[in-house]
Length: 69
Image (cartoon, rainbow, N blue to C red):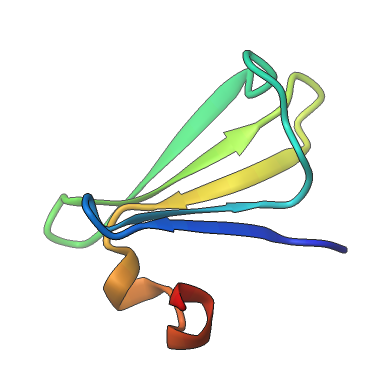
């Protein structure tokens, strides 16, 4: 399975896609929060329930170094 990883240093966010997705294809989003209530990630799902990708909102901490280069 190919993974598409992009990291935007300016906002410290990364996106891990499991395949290319088009505009509006993510029909549902699920927010993942940490114990303190801050948002850690957002999961994108297609209309059929397929996991399309994961957005990490504290990517420098969460994403392995080799994926940030």
